[in-house]
Amino acid sequence: MLRTGANVNLRPPNRTQSTALLQAVATKHTRVVQILLENGALPDAADARSRRPLALATDGRSDTAITKLLLEHGAMANSVAFDKHAPLLRAVRSSQESKVALLLKYGGDAHIVERRAGMNLLHIAVSKNASPGIIKMLVDNGVPMDSQDSQGRTPLQVAVAYSSTRAVSLLLRLGANPNFKNEVHYWKGWTALFYAATKSSNSRSDNKTIIRTLFKHGAELDSKNHAQETPLLQAVSRGAINQVLALLDCGASIMARNANGETVLHLVASSRSWCPIMMIWLVENGADVNWAGGKLGETPIFYAIRHSYDQKGIECVQSLLSLGADIHFRNINGLTPLSLAARTGSIELTKVLLERGGSTNSRDLHGKCPLHYAAEAHFGKIHKVVALLIQNGANVNSRDNFGYTPLHSIVAKEGAWEAAAELLKAGADRYAMSNDGKLPHDMVPDGPWAETKRLLIRFYMP
Image 1 (spheres, helix red, strand yellow):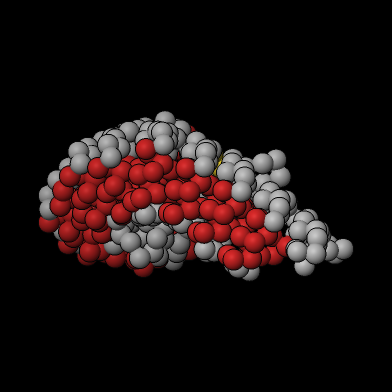
Image 2: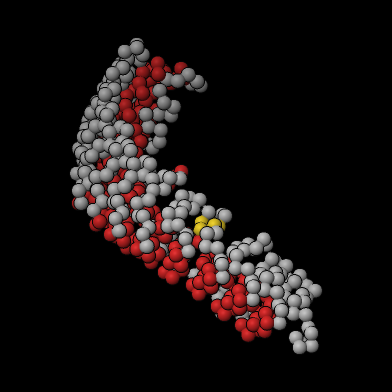
């Protein structure tokens, strides 16, 4: 047909508007591509979807010879107006080393940037754990090792974030800085180790090898981000136990503290993904179970109590106690673990702490005892907590610094009448007067049946 003068660039009258050359490239017929090009086929003629032959050749796993033929016959190595992606970007993304080499040889721009994520070709290559050859070609063609994407990440940090172990090793050998700090938003102050300490996006990798590789190449183990967290604190807060072990094996400080003075144990105790193995291992390796930190100067057991939403939280408290947590420790306000547990309204936690010797009559700086705090609970079975404290020797007539007894506090709450009954049964003084002259029945909130409730407090006989 070509010998009889057929138009090699003729398009069929259908929606695709695909030329014979495009069809040959799409079906990977190298010899046909060669014949068409030698007979005048336009190497950059696009179809109705704006796809050029070179785009098809670099996007798929076609013979490298097709890419070479197109380039030799004048196909543009760089993107043109209607290209969705540059041919070189396509080749890098699909890790086709021979095609990357060809495109660079024919003038492909190694400095193009993907608009959506702000990644250059080196970022993209390492995110795909591309071959060492591709990475080295891009570096040799001037792509900066410290270039940053839209999230402020260098190629090394991207490689770590994607658990691209081979790419990490190569970049470090080529001179990438393991201590480069991100300066963008949430990731401010992050070095490559922070990305390694975070749970991997690759479920099959725990980044242990990457952590060791970074350390061998001079990564600072105790570098701090904007929140004064170290990679170890980051790993602990994310529940990444294997990363924690790897960082500690390399020598990370187990007593590192964040901006609030919280240690690894504080973070473990407040984590929803609490791991008993991690907690035990940290204590065995030197973490102080009674280190006071945070704004209130609290030990990890306080954090565990505050985050005890379920059975796992209770187990966390029990684990800390078995590891030597001081049940009588007081925070800067004089609050003990038992008072805090009573305030949560958790009968289970209160029982655990009482069994371990928690004092029912300890008083904080405001003179409040656990019974006062039980009255402040917003959740749980308050009356059962009150009854349990009374059974274990709580003084029902203990007064705080303002002269209020637990009964004052209980009757001030809506729906706490069962708890008030427990106090009255145990001998609570219904006529105890506070420093400002208030009796317990004076604390009943105004509203429907308020007067009846006041009468019940004054005359109820258990």
